[in-house]
Length: 577
Image 1 (cartoon, rainbow, N blue to C red):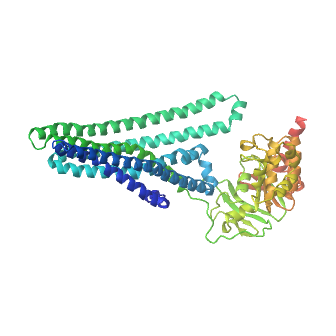
Image 2: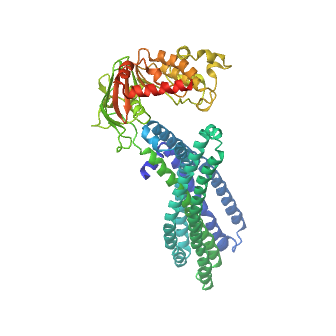
Image 3: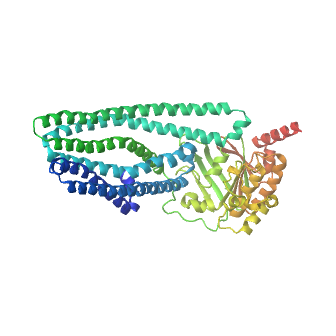
């Protein structure tokens, strides 16, 4: 882990060296005061060297001015090193998140991921800045103060420094529970973020069901967990700091008693005794800095570990000999496909399907049967293990093709349309970012939404709000269709694209979808069976298996599951009328 952390310093090594040199200079200047104090008390003042006293004072003032400038450099540029490292980590993390498979997002809440990108990396930034400086300044000050005190009175110095091992033992013993407590605190903080993200995203559902009190209760539960974790963390921190502070206080007691006895016995004079007290404080200060640094160190290490947890997640990768899928015709084949999301409980069992170029295959059946899983496997959103069948496009196993080339050849229209914050133009352009405005307009026309867009004051530059909140369900669906028109894929997946719409809107959207399907190989997951009567083939999926296949007429003639589903749906429609 240390090597990976240090690697982020490399682009800034020159600035880091300058920062550390400035820190070193600050430490060296810090030793000037006790040296000058010793000379003042033992030489300049007793010998009435007034001009030397003034010169020595001005020299100290000059050095303190230099130290002020060095501290500014360290504070500003040192923090900038940390910020730049944080930025690099954040970009690496975000880029890695974009490469992770669907399975990762199935098991990780958005709020928790956001915590890794924001607050966790801020703690890492603070460690990146203060860590090297604190370690260098404190170490140099401890060594210099020890060396200088040895020149004054070795035995007294060794007596004082005998407390150091005690301080080390106390620090080690107290640090472990503090580390665990702060790790738990971070996890509870992520829980709060996840609750906020979920509640804010679903605020309309909350209000519709008047469940604000329930959401507050859920949030308060997570907040209480955070308070409890914080209580444990601060209790551990309190024990840590009170214990270590007591040990450092012992330093002052020892120097007070032992130094007084040494002065009484004539082993040191008053000037040396005064210098010793000043110098010991220069030693105790860095020791306290290192002790206080432990909290920041724990926070930074915890944040970096959580950063690495995601970075170590296995990303989606192409096979070593993967090739581009080019000149796509659109022939699709599922060959004896078995699949289980958790690797244990199968969702699909021996599925065999063939869809020829330009054909439309509809998948019907009860929820949970495996229809959407088939749609997710075709674009290689989930990995199909060897020995569990194969999925082929134009006769080529998708595992032997690059992920990008497979997904570029497939367009998807889902029931739950996702639109990004931005303008109408931005969201249509998502289908092909390099498209011209004329091509965007043509895609909108084909999706039957251009006329509506032109009624808006800002037209294609209209902001649609978070997830398209300012648009109706039908308008959002048409935008997603326009996006696919612009992408112009050879293969199309319609995953219950109209099931959430009212009948009138469904008819209008269906016209756009029919236009979209022309000339494309299409896989349709249908909720309303009336929309797929004209499909080239219909497959009934139950319990992860294909139980019936054929055209609408053939399946109705079989008097099987499909006919029962179809009759039941239209019987319900008749009753509603």
